Image 1 (cartoon, helix red, strand yellow):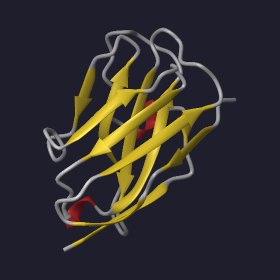
Image 2 (cartoon, rainbow, N blue to C red; image 1 turned 90 degrees about the horizontal axis):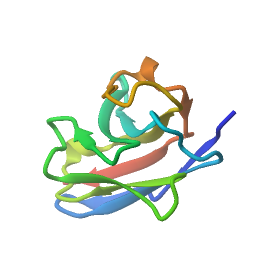
Image 3 (cartoon, rainbow, N blue to C red; image 1 turned 30 degrees about the vertical axis):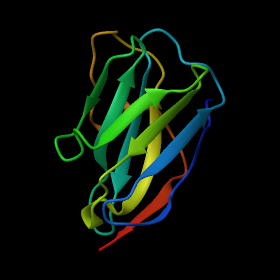
Length: 126
């Protein structure tokens, strides 16, 4: 079973930037999707961004234009570059992966992903 490990969280002032990294123990396969979710205290885990096996990316409306998801040098690594951070971006961020499926899918729901990291905390001060 694939294991995911995030890193890169921390404390930053509003308007600042952070980059989160995720490393998977197994390579991505055709039809896989690599993503990021976040969960603030008392709220449900929500979709942030995802990267299809083809390289196509998609984002939630709340982060579009500020966050960028990208693949690393190998297919088992991906990043979330966060810029223009706001206090409402504060949350625990989780990387996630769907191992296989239709290459046309654009999953956004937690149940559509089958592997999760342990989470990394991002705190944005006003």
